[in-house]
Image (cartoon, rainbow, N blue to C red; front, side, top):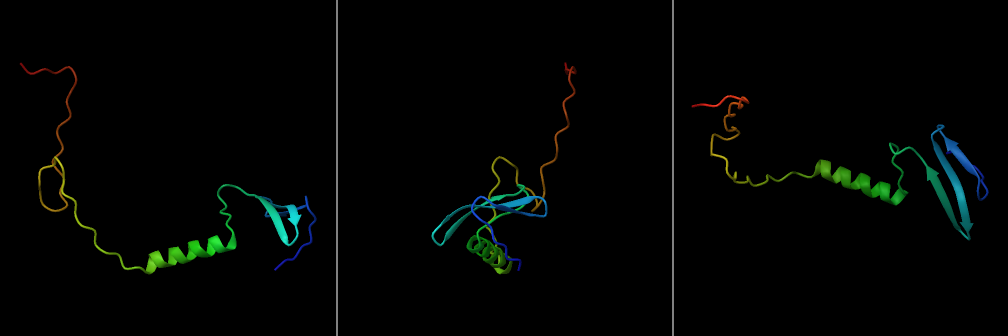
Amino acid sequence: MLILSRKSGESIVIDGRIRVKVVRVEGDVVKVGIEAPASVPVHRQEVYEEIQSNNQQALTRQSTALPKLAAVGVPAGPAGSRPAARPAKKPGLVKA
């Protein structure tokens, strides 16, 4: 772990894309500003750990089968089948 000393208003740069600035020091609380590209997720440690825990639970949780929904306005057919496509109308042709 790299440990740096910074005063209020001073910054560090990470990988040329992320800037961490000490905005204010109030007693034992340090306010930090972070500038990073939108593609770089930035979270407080406790939030990051919660996200990781939820992701892990989602991977290990056994999925329960969802009930099948009845189709509305679609003729019933074999499971997984789709109704036959209608031929496209050709503009300008009129049957007499």
